[in-house]
Amino acid sequence: MRKSKARKREIVPDPRYNDILVSKFINNMMLQGKKEKARKIFYDAIDIVDQKVEEEAGIETWKKALNNVMPSVMVKSRR
Image (cartoon, rainbow, N blue to C red):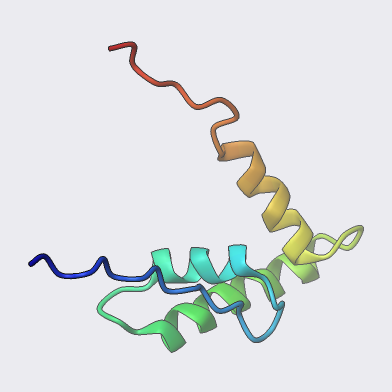
């Protein structure tokens, strides 16, 4: 008999912004399982953006930038 399929683990939102998208970004940025180091790098970068851009929050600037680089349309091959 085959094994049962492994369940998808739910992604826990990050502790500072309580956002799943930030958590996914940190997981992608992480090297060799060093999540705390990746979090520190990300949060420090957002703090720097907060200081430089005063008209909006650093996290909002990051989300705008992320939406600009995300593909808007998914292309599938016709088979």
